[in-house]
Image 1: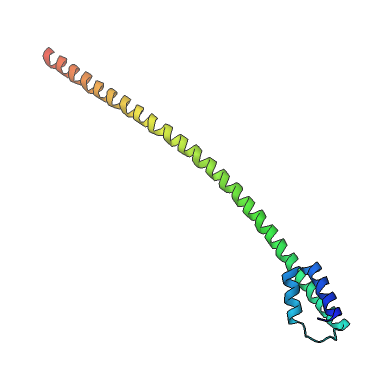
Image 2: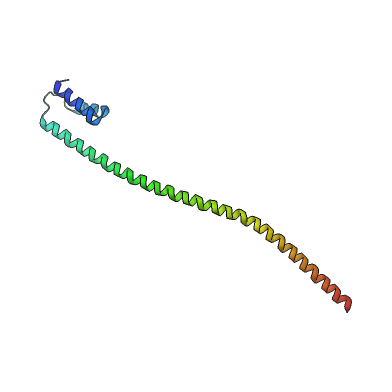
Length: 124
């Protein structure tokens, strides 16, 4: 590797990282005549990649915000479901109590009607 190519490779590793620098060095022509145009083209391509990464980061941030809002909504829904479950539990107990009261009142009413009918029949 020529000194210029080695210097470029070293700088690319600093800016892009090892894997990306390897990729770029591999696709660059093996000539020792690296021109300023080649470097400018490479720089322009790097700027395009940076912009794309920036857009991707923005989209990821928006997605993270949406996920946070969804998590908040799910927490509120869970709270509502717990309250509903508590109310439903109380409902069953109240329904049992009301049924007992109704059966006792109905039985008592039927007994009273039977006694009044029997008393009225014995007076006749």
